Amino acid sequence: MTIRYLVFFAQVHPEFRLPELQSIAELYGFQVIKPASLPGVSENEIWNPSRPFWVIDLEDEAHAIALAERCILIKSIYELYGHGNTYEDVHSQTLACAHLWQRFKEDTSFRFIVTAYSDRIPMSRQKEIVDSFAFMDMRGKIDLKNPDETFTCYEEYPDARYKTKEDDGKNTLLHIFFGRLVTVGKARALVQKFDVKKRSYYGNTSMEAEISLLMANQTLASPGKFIYDPFMGTGSMAYTAAQFGAFVFGSDIDGRQMRGKGDSPGIMIAATQYGVAPRIIDLCTFDVTRNPLRCGDLFDAIVTDPPYGVRAGAKRLGRKESDRDRRVQKRLANPERELLQTTAQEDYVPPTKPYELSDLVRDLVRLARYLLRPNGRLVFFLPTVTDEYEAVDVETALCSGMEVVANSVQDFGNWGRRLITIKKTTNESFGSPFEDGEETDDDSKNHVPAHKDFREKYFKRFQKN
Amino acid sequence: MVRLITHNLLACHAKNCTQTKGFPLAFNDVRVETKEAEFNADFLKSFYERKIDWDALVGAAKQLGDTSLPLERPEMVDDDFLQLLHHVLLEIHVEEGEMICPNCKHVYKIRDGIPNMLLAEHEIG
Ligand SMILES: C[S@@+](CC[C@H](N)C(=O)[O-])C[C@H]1O[C@@H](n2cnc3c(N)ncnc32)[C@H](O)[C@@H]1O
Ligand SMILES: [Zn+2]
Image (cartoon, rainbow over the protein chains, first blue to last red):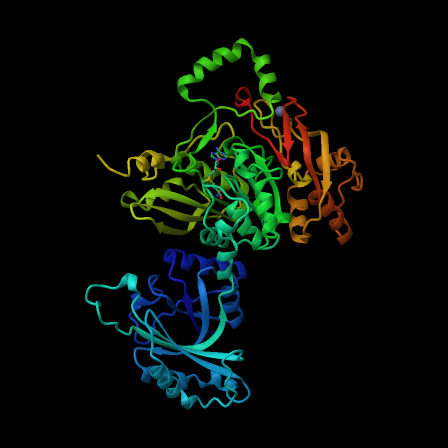
């Protein structure tokens, strides 16, 4: 037996909503069930990401509470008593499920809230609507401040952003929902807590709070998990993963990103501000393509925002083809001297060469296959030019044992970025893609993904010639 | 930072140093701090059972002046042992100093708790 709930979502990041619900359900081991049909709702309107209300079925109220504890995009959850296009429908459904609210009839203090999404209901009509539920015969004390239960009636009107020309002027009532508030979304407040502007250490690559939180949820972060960010930068996702209890390990080719200018590392200052410093296991400076980890099969998740060239270009150790020969000559001439020079210098910065994004993404997926435990997740952003994007772009980066479980776009107009969640579905151990011998396999290389040479396209403002 | 759990995972990766030859790195000239860490039995158990290099951990702890661990890797994982493991793996932090490769002698410097594991140009294969 399932119970029907109404979820009221924040109207942001619509494509992230379902993956987040599914991730939290997977983390706690329950199902979020999509209703096969709903009275007065056409099938393609069920779970429409552009609408703020979703009806879901759950096996237990505890599951609703768990979702509201963790899902960043949930504003509130109600036990649903009735919904439809008219109040007659809502009333008759409410009556039909009297067994759900009968227990609140006698000794429960309560209040009624009548409100609208994307419109305002005048006081007089609010009162009429409240009165129309008199058949419920609630006898407990009315308490507007601190009631035991809140019954809420929502009228949904079209979101201003999605209004069509025909809608103009008039505001058509789309749907009415009535139910009992189970819980407000507890995780949404974290968006304020992790606000980058209020953070004691951040940089121009810092990831916005809401997305960092959504990413942490995609990793299934929870106490005792071990999570790695190989492009740590200023650590935005480390704080949110640690907030949910995970231990975090971070690395970056550029120590200054993690360190900042102060005496103690900037990341540790911000982690202290958030109360998660003990969960930042370590920060190391290294090139992810030359990484010193002794073994794989280590992490429960890898969460990262790879450098894609716009603000922080990807680099790897080595030299551009053009000046390599010259250096080799020099090195052969005096290897001893160079060794002394480099390792003794305090802040030796070895030369780097550009790292093309599509290579980086392919390497990242293979590195994750090596470093993740079975069922571990890789969560990362893939920038892409919107009108050139094809689904195969993510596919080209995949390899056996790694499957996409979510792919949500954040749309910035002429470019976008996709948050990709990939799960390691194999128990087999694979080597690191950066060890000698591993050849880049298969023919997926022949397809040119839209994120190839992203940096160049970005600076040409995506003009095609 | 540079906790012993991290030390237990880092190997020299310069060319000609393999994950076995370049491990474990030797501490030198270190400044150590102890800081309370969060105890999580599952995390410790899974690291102990699946990933730990016991001899490397015992050796590294000894270099930092902690000889609380038994030389032989215990079979029995009880609460007392987990507490011990917790302290050694997570609460001892090397804030300054060096880690030296036993094979090629590359010196990895640690500053403000962050080790510089970058290789120089001639060290990459
Ligand atoms: C987009 S930023 C990550 C930002 C980070 N999420 C934050 O909150 O600040 C990418 C980072 O990758 C680092 N990076 C670039 N190439 C790298 C490489 N080959 N290995 C490791 N890190 C690299 C850059 O130094 C930069 O800090
Ligand atoms: Zn070495």
